[in-house]
Image 1 (cartoon, rainbow, N blue to C red):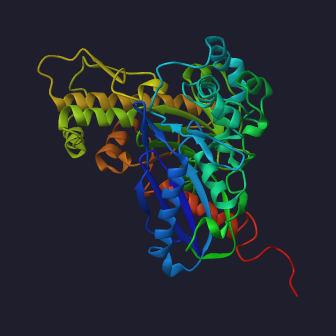
Image 2: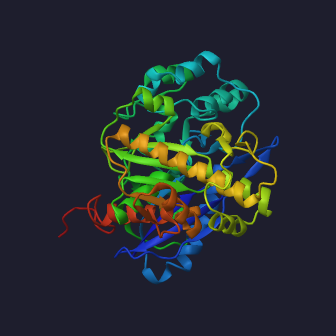
Image 3: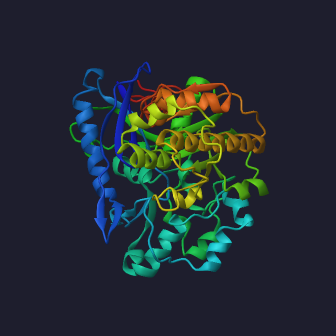
Length: 460
């Protein structure tokens, strides 16, 4: 028997398995399908589900075939800001605008935006308002697609959508649903003032469950050709960064995380939800962790986009050349260089406004610019982690580095040099998919519920 983890990411959908003993199986991946409409990129949940189901079937036929039937699975995905409107049967009515896109016209009025971004609201939801998340996206449908909105029964993230397709049950991860700004982070109760302002009801959302909770039995018809163990279930995964942090924490014990891929996301674990004025000023996220009563402080920095931009500007997109520059150049070679990174919520979408360089002397070489810029990003992340740890009431201690860019030895060595902190470099190539698989195995074979093939009832 084996267990499956599903990672629905921005560029790729990935699956990974673990066997009954927890031994990881090699991962499989395909490109995440997208569609273009009106010069904007969207994610179509129906196309994503087809890609997921096809990838699972292929994985079961090949990589996982020697390990017997599938005992259970968990799903992780990008954030709740990417959600879709579905009808009462679960059929998608309108695709999700890709998280890096921006519509030129806003549907939410300025007063509602100010209210959503107020400190009072922050104390309830734990989030500052951001463009093109649930409040703006549902407002867009109400204003510009009224027939679609009238037919909308639920507003669901991609985790929830795929879980429903596999089980027929509606269940949402607690680490996803709070990003809607429509729920109290401390209690997970619907927050009526926000829902009333946005024209939403609790029924628009799937019931929230913690990571590891059983969402439902896997329907054999949802995965044709995949052998299922009796009682095979889907358990709750959640937000991809949270699922990855859980896996890395299990390996390292770390409570401070730095994950870098398309963006860089800093996370610090805390036992309490205590939103402070300084957290609000910094624009920190407060979100649910992977254990029922735990929380995370989170902060995005667009480092991945900056690295990509530098590679395109100076090396024709060649990351090997960029990291060779980083390793070969000493810090402080451009003392006059002043680097400014745009606001994290907006700047990560395009090169415009992402990065500003001032004090650049004539004759400065690309390697010096690369080094100076990455020094600034590392120092910004270190300062932010320090503030986050202070707000969480913990020492920085060991920091776990995870994600594709930290698998580059030059990047990891650079952080060691700039931070002077104990670092755990995660060896996991796919921490989200493998983490989701481990969540399923742990929940279904140890303490999270009956084992597949055992319904907990006495037999005679």
